Length: 170
Image (tube, rainbow, N blue to C red; front, side, top):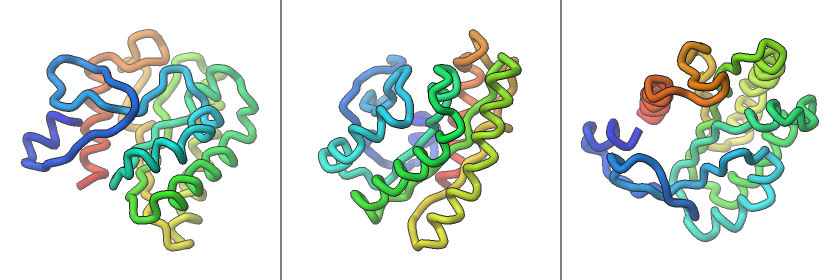
């Protein structure tokens, strides 16, 4: 995504309390916590938002709820609450909410699809309330062939995700 933004002559500053990623990135800050569920991100989101005051928030969140089988039926409600906390803390921010990518395990993928099916309605309800929230279809951007281990994308998969984010941002 960073490379696409630079190539498109867009300027920005990626923010977050973490630092990482390939050496080819121009900005290594982020808030992508490996293995964290929606509730864990939500427990910290207000502090991060107050510290960094982002203009844009990208959310690809929920895979760990599915993978850890953590109250998956209520994951959409947790996502909705997280979006509310984001929009209340930084009301001018543009929030992009992605439907999560496929999972190779068929049972977990079925749960992912059920979770994903709830996201358009959540986003629509936020937009109706005047919030700057956008839906991103990340599920259809990848296939299980784009997964290195059945869960995490290959380099090609990450590139497809970057292209999808970039299109949404435009």
